[in-house]
Image 1 (cartoon, one colour):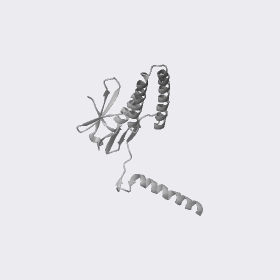
Image 2: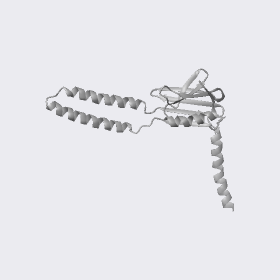
Image 3: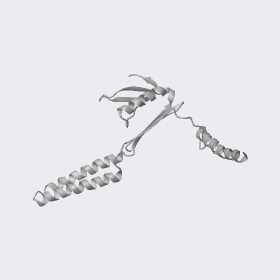
Image 4: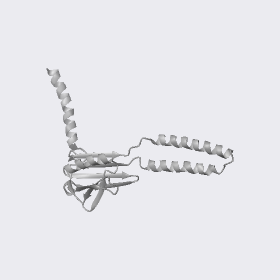
Length: 183
């Protein structure tokens, strides 16, 4: 009996400490509110940086083998165009790599919200009091759904990295935590 109560006490203390740590931020000594809504979206990259390098080498090898064969047959004028093709593929992969770390996050608590978007080298941020923020749903010029978050004079488009069905689900969640306005 005494042994079980020691075990219960030993396991109860860390549980109590961890529950307090979730509610209290030791660095800033402020209470942390649990989020009402927390969403983070990232770019979908099926080809890693190493995979892109491998594909570039394979494409370059194929192009230069074919171009060398044509040059040996007398069509040497093809070689510069082959190099240009490989350069364009490298450029496309380079532009994609600049957006590998793109993300969008939205965290809404009982009192405030924070929206952040990283697009390439730029980061956009909108944060403020939740009760003063509002959102608008509509369609863009291509007919797909568009969600705008408005705070003061600032308006941002939310869900840029989401599919249309994911934006539809986000609209429903945002309607629960923000006032909806129509344009």
